[in-house]
Amino acid sequence: MAKVERFEDLKVWQHAIEIGVKIYVLVESSIISKDFRARDQLIGSAISISNNIAEGFEYNNNKQFMRYLAIAKGSAGELRSQLYLLQQASKLDQTNYDLLYKELVQISSELKGFIKYLSEFEKKN
Image (cartoon, rainbow, N blue to C red):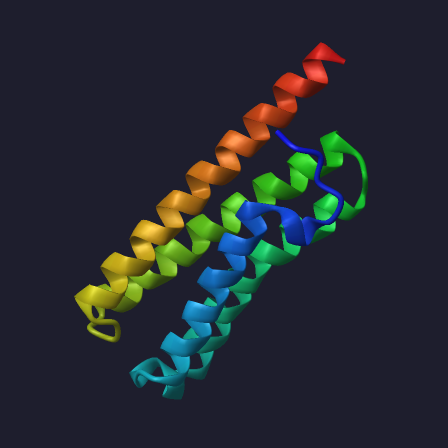
């Protein structure tokens, strides 16, 4: 893996930002826009993913970074759960749910892989 100087260079952070933007677009353009509690929860979970990646990176400590990556992964799971509930309550259409679900499973996998990579790196050093 190439040396990364800034968290903005991380593909997983870039992916998290893409998800956050999609959530913002969703909540502004659907019936969720009037459900302030759901809207705020969705946005909070979505931005927590990228924010935790960024915050953990800035500590310049792999153990701390792994901890924050795990929190980001948890936020991705929280967001998946919220979307599932909204889809079941007919506040989110199946197409949007399926697209976002796929993205969130993917980023969870990316985060898990990154945590594993850093953990193995720590064991070697």
